[in-house]
Length: 321
Image 1 (cartoon, rainbow, N blue to C red):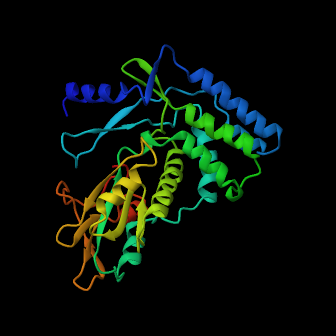
Image 2: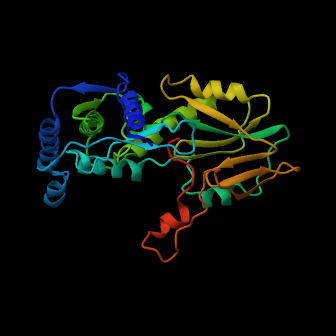
Image 3: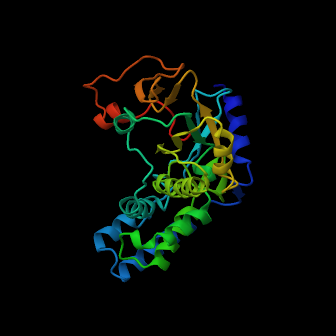
């Protein structure tokens, strides 16, 4: 991509005043001071030990620099905004909060990998007249409604595995979301809506929000949905062939910013993750491997210095649309 095209697309992303807001100065010191204040409160209340407090306390924070990751499989190469939070003042605190939520709140819709999806889906028999569709959230992380996330955590508080009381925990979640900021082209910006790709907290918050939307939509559908599986922002489900528009409307009417697009099976086949799901003549489902048209055909050497979980389980489709 030419530098001019990249800068133009990045500016178009950043100038979305519903998501980002320019600020005159670097807020790193302010966020770092507040981060350390929260850590001290946790330590003084004996909710964390001295070692954990040292890990969560930051003194050398640096403002993250945003970059755009091209979506090579989409027309006109749109950019996905990524904010690497490793140097941010709240990085370790967001990891701490994320670990609590991840071990506490399990999604009943999510599939952990394409292998598990394949195992669950093969041999499933769909009712007569049902077909396969997939729903994809448009820019999931930056469109996660923060108020929805906080309400969902409060509603499911009895499931949260922590000694931190609800009031303090919600303060931590709120601060971690508010302290999303970055630098681009010499200017500083604060993210005012959604969560940042690059924050350890974003995946679990996005899952909480999306699960809430799925539950609301499913409860309002006037027909049974025999199968629904989700991998991050990609939802696979089977619905009556004449109800596709109704399903999409139900999923899109609950949150203004959390909108989905639909892909319908063609010739009884639907690509999902790194496989093609096939609806056979007897309405049973089977799978075969799928590669995108842009796939290079190159593969990782089994003996390369790469974690085997990545070699085996990482889907070839984008996890954020």
